[in-house]
Image (cartoon, rainbow, N blue to C red; front, top):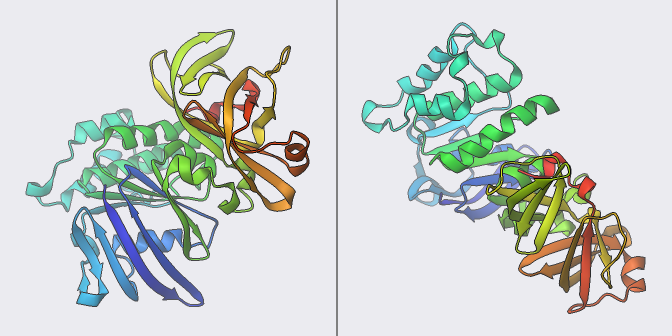
Length: 359
């Protein structure tokens, strides 16, 4: 996907001044409530016209106020999935899906209905009505209705916000499949860092109507200094790994840094996974520890040290190409005399890598 946005817009006392470019399969707009995330997707979707600026996707100009261009929402070929499913209660699932397809000219329909149904696992739901579906099932059907319209871009505005943890766990694998198997680029709004770390390929960080950072998910979420206060302890490292084996109730993963052990059976051997390591769960040793319960011990060299609020310190450790972020107290950093270039060991307890850390 190629999406470029540079806009200025005022809504009451709130001013949005945002600019970013993304080419990711799933671009997450991340930030606290009131930071401007929903306003941006409404601008992309054509529900709002900005006071000033330009929005372009895949070479198609949606808005260019300098040249008087504003493409109406119905001509943008964009699918929109809201927090609540907004299904038609008097229609079956099959009819809801068909409704999304009906308004797309036959010559522009590329979506295969059977493929959409199988991608989202909703075949057994086709004859049921929304009143007989769980929250997670409704959202899958809502996504299916948007995909059935053969969109060129899919907007998802906090689609999991109204779901409990069990329903979120149910729908997340389908969102991963959508990201990896569908050719439709996605702009995904969320204020939950765990969701973003699991799903996003690229992240746009927002605060008070401004873009504070944008880029690949691993680079942005490593910026502990710019995370919202309520999420700063959840930031850290996102790396790609491969499942090697299962042993003793654990899954063995391998990344550039070496072997990782995580609880449970995460995927089958050979599969690729994404691993999130919170910086606050990483300990640092200046010598290789012995007789210790932590199962993940990675050797590397310090590539960066920076101060954080409340006197904490962020330490970046290059472990054969994987940069592991650690958050420790300033007292510990001084006691260990940490400095760039120093050889150290990053220690992570397997138990801290809960099932939500592996996707």
